[in-house]
Length: 109
Image (cartoon, rainbow, N blue to C red):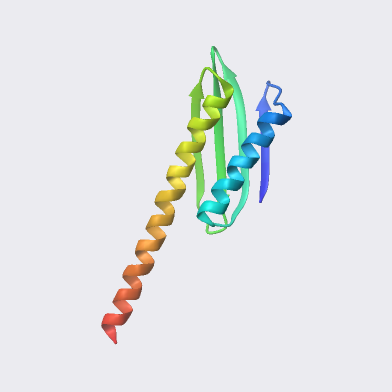
């Protein structure tokens, strides 16, 4: 998986980059959805930081979410929690549809 962490008119340190990559790897291992690339962009607007996270999966889903907070790590946490929620719902949807089709095939036999 290709992970890109950047900042718009903002310097992003190595510790924040490593922190973001570590959390995305944890999500990848937890849900096993084969992501192809991830893009995390930090910006500063007025008094707060904004984090935009984009994750593209090999199945075609592109999950995009944002988080805003006064601290840069908090904005990242908010966006990652939302991203994980989107992925969790997508995984549940795939699993439920698979079980329904499997049950339907057994009823036809």
